[in-house]
Length: 57
Image 1 (cartoon, rainbow, N blue to C red):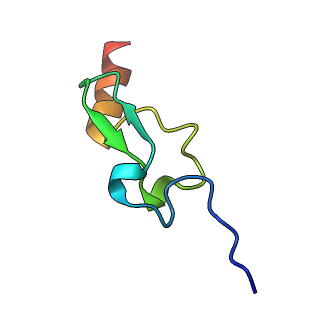
Image 2: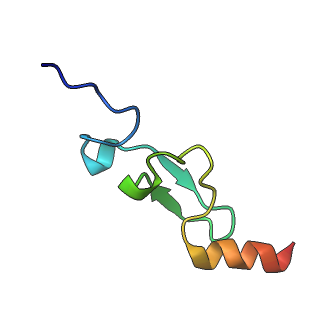
Image 3: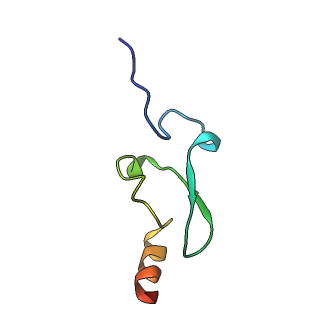
């Protein structure tokens, strides 16, 4: 049986995983297992930054 490779971070070293920059705090954040299905929709690094963005706009 062959294992299917995952599209994003699964099975990669943390330094090789995809990353994005949070538009609120400006800090980079990288792929996490809990974001596996929604990585394209993830914009903010944390719940705190997501709330701050809603308050500002």
